[in-house]
Length: 568
Ligand code: ADP
Image (tube, rainbow, N blue to C red):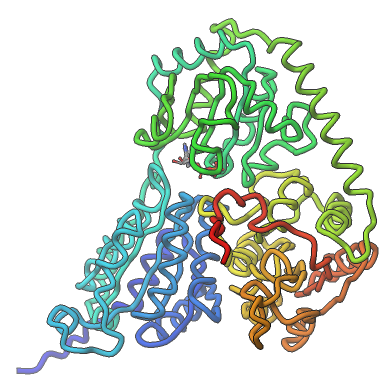
């Protein structure tokens, strides 16, 4: 018997794309190969942006920063086994930083992998991903793709955001399914990250604690920046009159030039404050775990976080406020008048102002020096002065000394414009974040990179040139990791472990791909190059020659870098 009715069919490839588009996801960062090449091709053909990278870790970092900037999961697409593992580093980093992203990897067939029969790029990816992700899913039937994508999106952005792994075996992509059935299987995620209102009694407790404070301090973390509750956070800071400190990626939530910023008196306020309001900031190593010398006098904490298990993670939290930052800060604002909060003590504010003035004068003197060759300070002064005229620039920053100094010298004026080494304090995010930020914002990016940090993702200069992205990379070139001065104590032929090729010309690298290279040996040359590169709006790299004796071992992390005491 023959049937004349032709049934319209679709397949796994198309359904993945349809499911993403159905949820307003329009960009994929990735690297093609077996079995996902056609997925990338079809995504582009269907009107999505596919940004192809040279290494999956950088594609993953781009997706992660896109997620941080937009509150929508950034998508990274990789091949199986090694491609997946390369992407997994970025997924783990995203999860650690609370950035929403979805790593989608093609994989080998279950029946061969599970019997360990030796498939092409065989690997049990789902189980490997699990401990490094907020959630991990595998889809085996085309009709479940809609559910798989919906669950991945929800897991990535709801509650504390994080990285999600989605495993798509090769056979699934080619599976056919009747088109009508396929369409009905798609899910549009409703309210992916629902507001979480704080309990009224916890709001009262927090306000009561603040009311009794003599030396209050607000500490803004990147969770506060992520929340996009900018106006309420600013109103809370300004109405209470409490001095605040931004963590590095929260810089710009209020402009760094704001009168209430206590950044220039950081050590003083951390040690002296009696009540600290943590807004989307964890008391991890970046904050000395909330104890010890850094925190000086005894203090009590209010902590606003969406993750209840974050509370008491390092020290006792007197007033936890659990909910999304927008709702929590909104509730505090609403309760301010009723709580009878007064403006902070003049003595406290005066002491801070005095510290700020002293430290700013010290810093100004350092910045004013003009050593030859340039050091970190004179180079960063030049960059700071150019960037003042570009308050909306996206800034990527990594390195040891390059990160530490840039964080305190370069002012941010707008929220979510600074992207850096984050919670792990890692190297390698540079070019991935730069591409992600440029593609997501459509605005220029300046990446201030230590020469060592740059090396982890430098090949993406080709990606930047290929997509003609307005990214200016500045390599702080001091010939090595930390410094370029170590020597091999044996007198042998190999250079010391921390040293690179001397006087390398990183600017020549970008010229190979049609970008503009600059070589800068003075602050004036550096300023001119940066202003020119931003004005040109084209891919550029500035090789900034820094004194190879400048810089300290591990930057400010010397205490984390054990050194042998047993000298032979
Ligand atoms: P930083 O490194 O800037 O100090 P962290 O990454 O340590 O910041 O802390 C961010 C915190 O913000 C995390 O504990 C996370 O759970 C929380 N967070 C993220 N998004 C939100 C949100 N929308 N509402 C409330 N808390 C959030």
